[in-house]
Image (cartoon, rainbow, N blue to C red; front, side):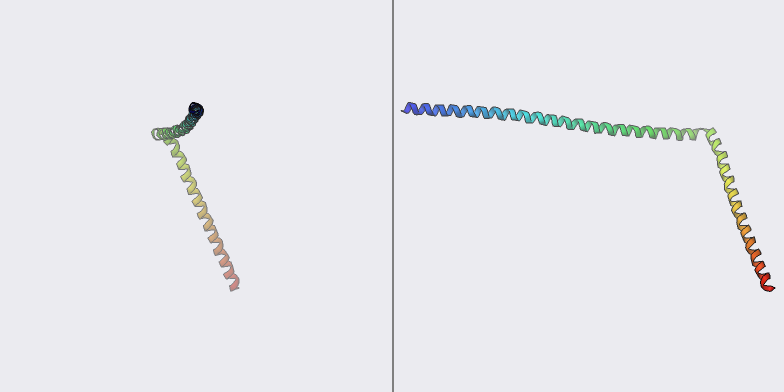
Length: 129
């Protein structure tokens, strides 16, 4: 009887041990899956970060190229006497046009004043008569 009880306990222990082995194996495979998923997630995040960094670098390079082009144009204008000579007649033309506009405005004001004086004189003559 004692031997049969021991055999039952041994059988129960073997089943429990087998069940524990199965649970440990499942847990282990689940950990491997989690690690793999985390690794894939980290890789995806790293790739996304790299893509964003590349976009920022490309934008910075484009801005640098534009800045260099503007600097080159400004330097060429500063160092090109012909360009300055070309600018001088245009500036003179602008000044002449401004003077002409001012003279026209002055003439208009003078004409308006003369017309106002003539109208006032006419009105004074009409009142006197």
